[in-house]
Length: 110
Image (cartoon, rainbow, N blue to C red; front, side, top):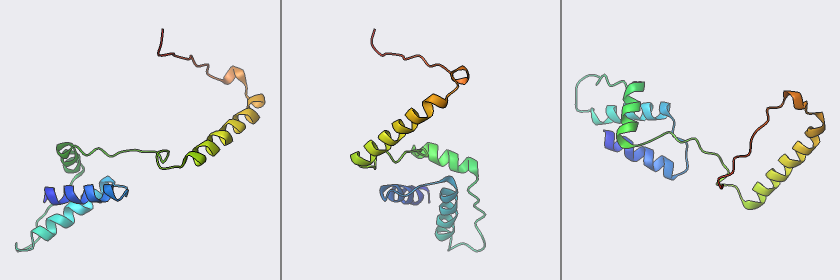
């Protein structure tokens, strides 16, 4: 059952679809029900949050939080950067520097 669920997760990720914990739990219950059709009565498998966490840790499946920056074209990225810089330039005169947190520039070189 676990191997079939793992294959489903990998297939979904290869199709660039989002994999969430609720979906993993649902598919675990569906897979368990399909594999237990020869038994009489329900299998009683629940796929608790702890089971999902253990399953993901066992197979090394982190839930990834990704941005869409890797899928955007160069032109789109440049347009967004230019738009953000123009926003900052317009907002700069209205900023209250006494309420702004100063940041240090940390250089990786000496």
